[in-house]
Length: 172
Image 1 (tube, rainbow, N blue to C red):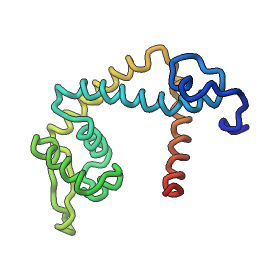
Image 2 (image 1 turned 30 degrees about the vertical axis):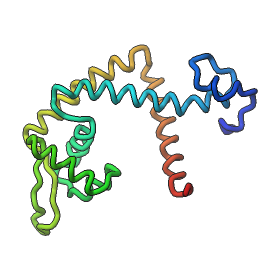
Image 3 (image 1 turned 60 degrees about the horizontal axis):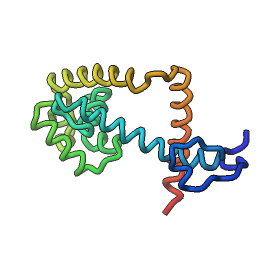
Image 4 (image 1 turned 180 degrees about the vertical axis):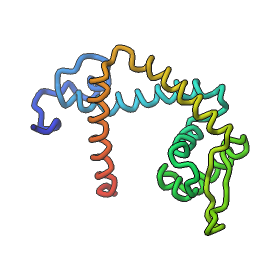
């Protein structure tokens, strides 16, 4: 299978790649991909922020709580690593979640310097509500899109993420 970037075709130029017009060139289509991914992520963030407002949870807080729902009791430093956040940044996020009763820090039984983060009953209740709201929103977001199209997109984005992850260490 040939590389997408090895495709032939006359580019319509940078401005055309940014427009909403049909693209004839594969080069223009590939240029457009990044903008479409960015715009879809931006719009999804706006929708999710609005959905979660009644829960009094920001998207960043919801993101941390989602990680905790899969690994409740994880050490705070491990959670920072898994989320790709600095320890200070995550610490502030956890502070705010603790202040509103969504999580609690507990000392590790074998090493009191280690703080483990646990969802509270209120945090677990909010996680359940977040899931219901997200499932409902996904139905609207994916209207007119088949599960096969979703599957193909997920597979493509996983490959894209793998390639981008490999590039991180090469670019300085």
